Image (cartoon, rainbow over all chains, first blue to last red; front, side):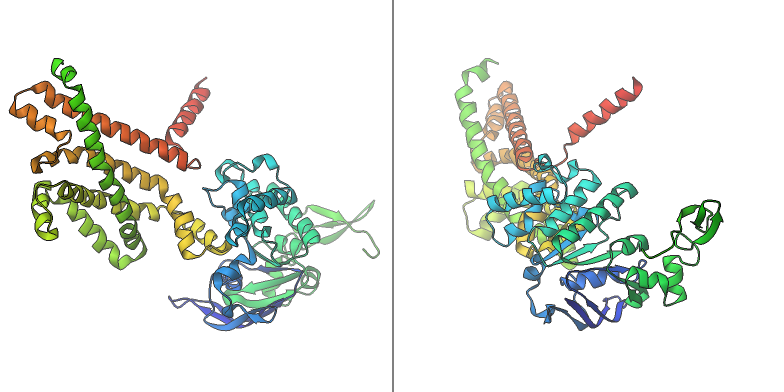
Length: 273
Length: 227
């Protein structure tokens, strides 16, 4: 469990990225922080592994303040996946995956053997092990990034807009992989994105953020869609117009659902799901 | 030509001597430039100071430096130490800037990624930033090496014998082939050392993009389009 207690972050230039933010992130669930740029979502994520220290307030992991932990050791115990994979360009795929175990003192040979297994886990062919990141496609780099995040078998996985830079088809593929991995591995995942569709797809708990990391609404995707807390949330998730604003249209074969642009999105089936 | 053939032993001996005298300054200059380059890269305040001072060092004429060093350091004027220290100073002057630039060439996103996965500052510098700065550092090292090899010939003016001996001896005795032999030998030494550095770079940095390969590929693409 990760807990934010009245956390504020004021940067030296005076901007307040996070203003009195409190949140409980349950263990073994995926929590998605979603908001547009300037909502402080990445700053929140980076405060968990002390890439950023809060100006006031505290962050606890399993009731222990991260402030009391050595930042370098803390980071090694938390998986981190970032945009573009964040791979080290001078290390081969296998060594990139083995980075964290090697840093914590696992013999290189053993770390590499484990890394090979992780390539299987994230759906990469073992023949890519000796390649350098620049020789991989964007999607492959991102999978290596996920494998590296998992290598030390951390309880917590932080994902900072990991699929922001890949094309929509690869992104959909990676999102499905993430869901599969989460079902298999059962980690506490904190995922940051600006894409509400991605948030609803991946999140058990979705946190919609406004400027200064003000929480607009917290809930499961269904709770938020069924009862948006404000105009802001409604327009952000697109229930007024956009893909989530559906109208029933009766046809000879039954009722279909049509979006604001007039495209048929699905068929209405009566009864419980 | 006959002079060269008759004196191959002399030329070979001087070449080896020349190499020996150059290697230490190149190595020392490289090692000393690392902390200087880092300080210049890391702190904005010291950046201007370090780069200006090292840059100015390069403008001191070598003869003047040979005269200054003995009085400052208490070494003999006519000594190999005087030459080696002077060459080291020039190598540092070149390398400090290139190491600072090289560290600046490392993608900040990579530096941040290394921090995020748990590299401590010291380890991150030596195993991530320094290797990634390698291609630009190598470029500076090549310039420093070639310049040191050429510059070392002035050692003959303070009585240190190396390939420079062929210049002064050839001039005094009016043996033009001897002077040319000296020039060509210096160029050959410089070319060989430069080639070795490039080779070492290829071996140590297999991940680095090769400019020539890229050019060839681009050319191939263009030819493909034309066809």
